[in-house]
Length: 265
Length: 202
Image (cartoon, rainbow over all chains, first blue to last red; front, top):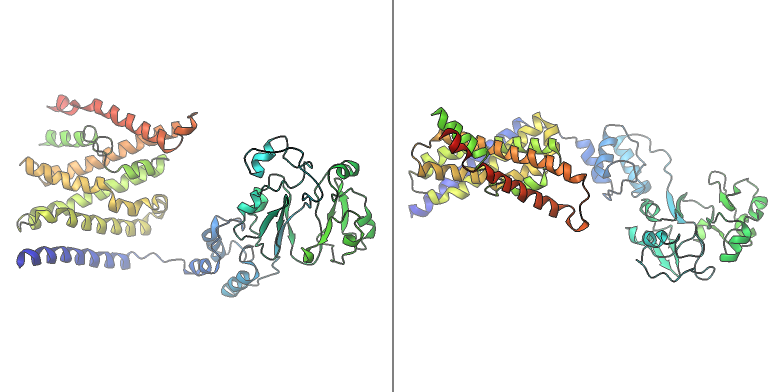
């Protein structure tokens, strides 16, 4: 009997002793934890996308607790997270600008075509290396879906040679913006406003030849707008989001139908 | 006596190097040897654990396990003690040297399962049984030497890896493969120390 009991007692005794010593040491040597940072970390979504500009959610939580950062930098969590954090910190949430990513191109196969029959690697980054991409518009979307694969929230669909982002599903993490080799995706503030869905910098006649819906820089929108919020820059119209009131007049006036209202997308 | 201790110390660094000769503790050897400062920090932590672990396990083996005929419990008891020691060192490091604690990161808890540490504690006892003159002091010197041997291997290899980083390596060999090749060459080069200690002090 002792043959079994002795070793068991010995090991258990050593384990108990070691446990007791550890318990004492951990109490004596306790490091005050940053409970504030941990509580804030629990509120953050944990996507670790880095869109706030810090090294993941842990880094942002630390910066928030030490007062180096303001709440509202987390686009993934959005207004809800900002509200709970600012309530916890007892500071003013400020105006959080919800922004969504928009693909600034309408060039599906209905309006434009591929200039080559691309048989290489099926990624935008790969195709962009070969003679500037497969689309006949060198500024346009190739529809090979790098942004769709980058999106963690399933907000992007690619069909008919064009990527489309659902603004209701977009969380503004900026991963698709980094993924697009044509730099077609930009953030726009998420309120009712006009967006120009063309990024073509060619002259109107050249654009017209390759795309039936691309902006030809006719400046009709510029003349229509009563708020001086839309201008032709680099041969395509650009909306000044600070001035746009979302009246929708430019979208109605555009002969190419490449200006849409964000709410209709 | 002193000469014998020096011989043990040198032998445990050069001819009986735990990493390059016995192939124990390869995980931190490959994992932490990317940068010189983390490699040094890890080696110092391992050396400290080795010495303290041997200081704790040797008496327990000699005065508790052996008299009661429970030598077969050696492995499990040693693992228990080493694990507790590493936990304690972790707590102490976090309190007093947080920069080292952050630099070591996951590798510090991994010392718990580092076979080099367990290897040292087990092998010094084996040596003590084979040679009656190999007592507690010799065991401690051996453990310290093994830790320094680990440090030597880590620092050497960190230097080699920093050089590898800047080289044009064939794509298929990049990363771990070339590291393993370099590690094996370093280990082979350490075979050159065979017989050195006996020749110097014998």
